[in-house]
Image 1 (tube, rainbow, N blue to C red):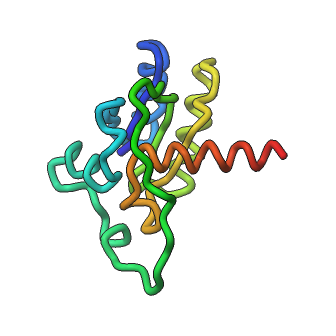
Image 2: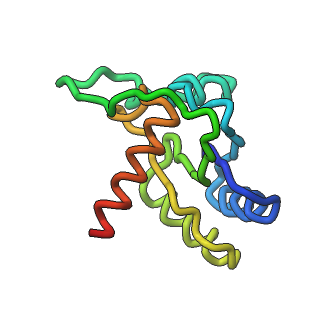
Length: 137
């Protein structure tokens, strides 16, 4: 499954088409879910709960999640794609198919992992933005 928030119908169609190329379904997400944990969003968008055994397994060590902050009242949610239980090759194929659509890339992309599954959507977006800034140097 791919969780998606994009800013136009054309981009939504491009995401859905690229997802179909790898046999994955797409669920739209939005600002109303910024305070929810990824695990809650996944469960809400699937019949079976959508959590593979790998994502349900407890980690053998403690991790420190990002500091949870309240979502600012006028927060403008950026475009984002979140890949749930999709192998690396599937993500590559999806990205290639999306690129072939001619649409500009979606800047924020993440795969759900045991490390981030209990982060809120807002915390994930913040972490992805910090990573992008760090890579810019």
